[in-house]
Length: 101
Length: 465
Image (cartoon, chains in turn purple, yellow):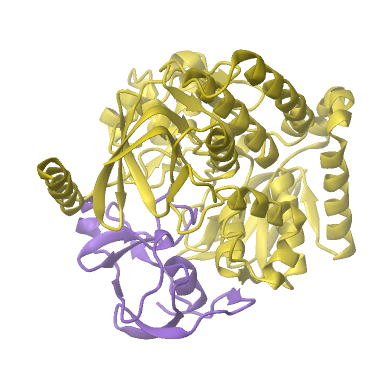
């Protein structure tokens, strides 16, 4: 799941806090956009589609495409519309949950 | 519950300038915006951007600071992180903020919902690592995140803008694969005379091309047969220039071939839309003030037809004048005098548009994609599926939903609607206006039972009080 990321922070401004993505502990910048922070941390894909199981990651970054869906507190939510919080637990939505949003 | 004169949906250039002008005329304004900071996509996060980021993004970006500052006015309430999911009776807006549903009532509503990237269905466009060029720019503006070794694909000034910003950020793109042709450029020349009135845009375009040349960024112009390769993620992109085949290995592909009005909110309240052949998209029907067929609802900015950020700001002010006139905040002569000046500026802003639209048309290979290409990203419906539905007698996009679920996933057709309409129109040989578009139903964005329950509780408490 974790890869060498082509995404880099050019002017880091925030303290990094512990966030869990699936089974992995990540240090992500507090208060920054969650999808962006996960990209920098090398997380890819974010989920698999319910139709064919194909891998997906962020596409539009503006809350329109719903490709960056992740699972937080039992809810399927758009990672690009959220900010990193300390202790956040992020998971991949299992295929059969994607339509429950 | 909020009770105001004017509810504005969207705090981009149109919404922000409309809010300020209306507030100055004594109108109480509530602005609802999805993002944590006002600015829209073009001025995203402008209030918080560091000096490093502002240098990379340029003056055009920091120009937005004047607009965000304008929101500090006693008559303006800005609600950030507010996601609108329903508009009713042309006066009521339901939205969610911080996990709670809420209701706002306004005498007038202004939709300033901006633009979306034009869907660019190519083989492989759903692979992780493929994003819109706008997404890369949002990452830069909002999070100071730059992307190394990306390939930019498509056409239009935004592609050049992002490429130059990437150069300045120290992460130059590997290449630009451009889909416009010399023939497009020749065809655009008849608009050049008119475009000279908008000469700063032409100068800016030339300067960007020069900057890319100086940075040594390869430009492959007139590309066809573009395919993104990869199994679990993007690995390479292949294309043709004339008859010669090219292939570039890359893990990030950024797509852009223009933007289109985001019409979801307008369509959800049955505002009629017409096909605009020059801009290759549907636009809502509005009068010169931005008033729609629903008399209490106005539309301004790119959501009413693509004109860009500065044009959007003027259009927002023009709508605000008419709204203030409706609500007796300005006399007719004063409204007309103020509008006259704004319309002059607006005309200059839009002067270069026909030239740009003709020189950088959408990529033909994404308007008529190959059968195997996915059109509906959510439900994974292909172009071939849509054509097959047409063969079975499917005439319009709403029927296509019943045939194969296209447009019924979480994005509600935002990234397939235009493609489905265009494929059906071509397959059935009927006009885009007759083919139409998906009927958009609320909720415009998903809303949970918990958010609705919290909304009900707060409304009941309010009644008790």
